[in-house]
Every structure is written in structure tokens, then in C-alpha cells.
Image 1 (cartoon, helix red, strand yellow):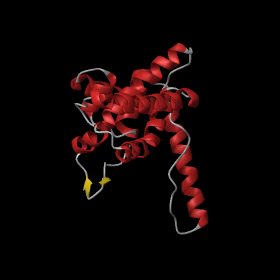
Image 2 (image 1 turned 90 degrees about the vertical axis):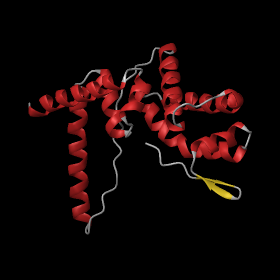
Image 3 (image 1 turned 135 degrees about the horizontal axis):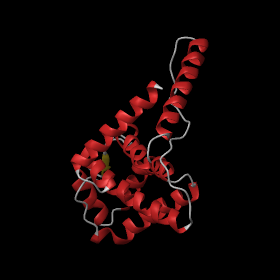
Image 4 (image 1 turned 60 degrees about the vertical axis):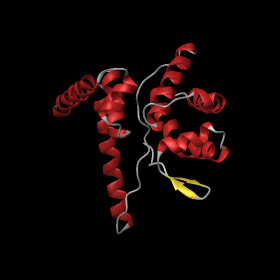
Length: 193
């Protein structure tokens, strides 16, 4: 979902999240700008799968970063910054969507990666296969429960590990493994039909 942290602090490069977070807590606007630039797109795509209302997602992302800057001195991150942002955004989007009586689900958009092929024809054929495979997968995923959809997206589309999934979903790590396992088993049954 997000690329690794690599922040260029004046004088040296910071790859340690704790040191980076301390820069933000001390009021470093460059570090805060980097935080926003580094995570905003991934947060948007994650949020839009929770609630398909772009206005809600954008408002929640805006509020999240405003709150981070406003309360930076009091925020302690016990996990990773990525996980902290994802959990915070999820909570905010769900609350705001409920306030507005909006539907919450975990659908992915129809965007796809560009395929590189030697000829235009091969490129087009690969693209058509990719689109059809993606559509079939999404049709199968739509038959899962909301909880199973969420865990599949977190694990396989956003590449969260099981510990991060357990924190985002508010379940134990063992439950996260079980949810993924059951969702995959259900998908296998659906695909066979």
C-alpha cells in the first residue's frame, strides 16, 4: 500500500520511523509535508474501498492530518506510522459514513497496472485478459461477507501482515489468520462453480 519510509532530513537521510516521528513532534514542517506526500495516495485508495464516497474519504484524510499536526506533541505511535494512519482513517471513515447513512463496503476500483509487451496487439490482449480476470475475481469477492472482503483486501491488495490486520480489524492475530483462511476457502468454493 505504501512505499518504505525514506525521509531526507537536512544533513542526513532518515529511515527510522521513530526518528522521523520525533521530527514531526518537534514541529518540523518539512517532515510533516513528507508524511502527507508519502501516505496520502495510499490512504485515499484504502479509504475509498471502505466507503465509495470520495468526499467523505477526502474529508477524513484532511481531518486526520489536521489532527496529527494539531496534537502532534501528544501522539504516541506504538506500531508503525502506516498502521497508525490506516487504523485512524478507517475509524474516521466508518464514523463519518454512519453519520451520513452511507454504505460501507470493500470494493476495489477498476484501475489496473499497465502491462509491458513487445507489440501493441500483445499489450491489448494482455490488458483484456487482466481486466476479465480482475472482473471475475471481483465478482467472486463480492460474494464474501463484508468482514471477509475487508480481510482479503488488507492482506492481498494492501499487503498488511497478520499482526497489522489484527490491529486494524480489532481481532487477535490468530483470528486474523482464521479470517484470511476462511475467506480463501470460500473463494475457492465460489471459483469452482
